[in-house]
Length: 401
Image 1 (cartoon, one colour):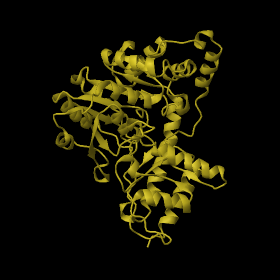
Image 2 (spheres, rainbow, N blue to C red):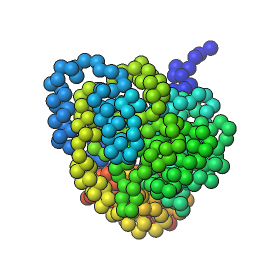
Image 3 (cartoon, one colour):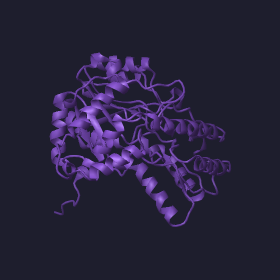
Image 4 (cartoon, helix red, strand yellow):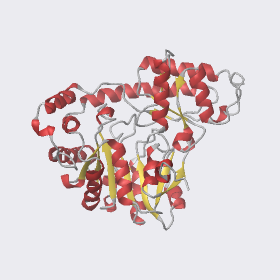
């Protein structure tokens, strides 16, 4: 009998759709084609200078040439605890913090630590592409709670309750949201948190976009708004989006001490400590002021408004106004089945492929986020590229028959 070369567990993992689209766009650009990419969720700003200088100094410090604690530099863990109190009003101590290799490792370790095979996780769709894979690797079962543009991609307590079963252990709560930019109002956060507490559910809350909200929207941490959740909350966060540090790979997990201890044990065998130089940079980021962050947020807000206006001017496209993060998530369902240059796409994935080939614009189709019939566009790119890219899409879609 021939045994499979790759384990069934790993074979079941899907490639990151957002990174795949970004890689294809970059390959086409390298081949000389003027592709504009809306795929990757990555700020186009450089990391602020004071953070880079902290990393340079760390390179010269012999202490950082050696192993450090697997759970993170003690001074960084304390700084993250202080920053969490400052920014969301949630009081934790350093023993409740685990520093991870980016936000993705925090996601993976949270589910690996909380889930046993068969445990169910309620996930609001559209959802970020990594969540399903992390849940699956932990043996969990994802239960989708599907939202759409009619509600601004917000889930209600009634929807969550309809999806809950006796096997439900975790609610994954994300606000602001990737991919939709949806932001829950404080009263909505409170209602959902109290519902979760009533049913003794764990809440894993991803707060990586906490500083990127616009207009009258504001960030509210479910851990703070609903203190009765007690020690059944795990907070995921990191420096990538707020400080334009996607390449530095520093995230963190905050939770009850027993959960953090168990996750730290896992990390000690998986990766040991996060790069000390990157941790020193993260320390400078979370202890510094937010002036550089505010300048980036203002640019994102300007681009957000421009993108939404341009998208909604395209016949057949409907784009709710995102309130946070740096993504728009327009519906293109009305365009499916129409003819574009002799081709008739039936799915948003097929339409995105045609747009990339013909208009040279890279978009991520809704299939990647659990809701076909949509595109995700990041507005974390330069103003000129944004205007040119959306204009190309508009011109191409105008030829629909």
